[in-house]
Image (cartoon, rainbow, N blue to C red; front, side, top):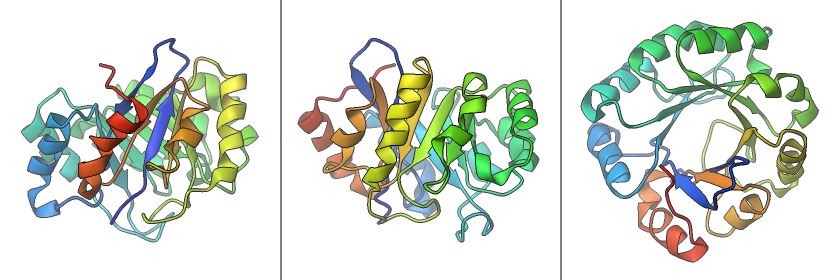
Length: 231
């Protein structure tokens, strides 16, 4: 079961959370229907993990899947692409054409983040910048004013089922204090027992859980923590 999750916070003075299920561990033979089920259950967007057996030792899916989903689901769903790949520059154009809305790349995976940020914007997508647990948050700081979202990994990227790394939370706190208007995303091992640790540092959040966890992630989580969707 893919039980990783992420929580994203902004400085907006509104109290609430937007839920975005990851489709990584959904029933892939019926992926479109699974996505519709998530959206009908209150999901605010869809999170898609992209990997090709380099940067992380796993294979998921690429832009043809995004294009197929966009055609089936229409223009409304927000596609958040977590690009766990080396040389993320080569996939910007295909993802934009396929219908991706946000392109989140890993700082460790490119030698020219500034050029890549510009390219993503020129292709009409929002920019997300991710750091792995072993990367210091200060390494991200020079780019913080050029991006829409900073992603702090609370597990090693690539596989679900990992334990939430609580010692990553100071990174979230540091980013929030240094960049008050920046969206901050926490990804990995976030669930009913750990979500409050992230939410304490975030004003608004996006929570992601594996599709097979829908029975609690989109219902119990709302009730237990008082989350609601912000459109």
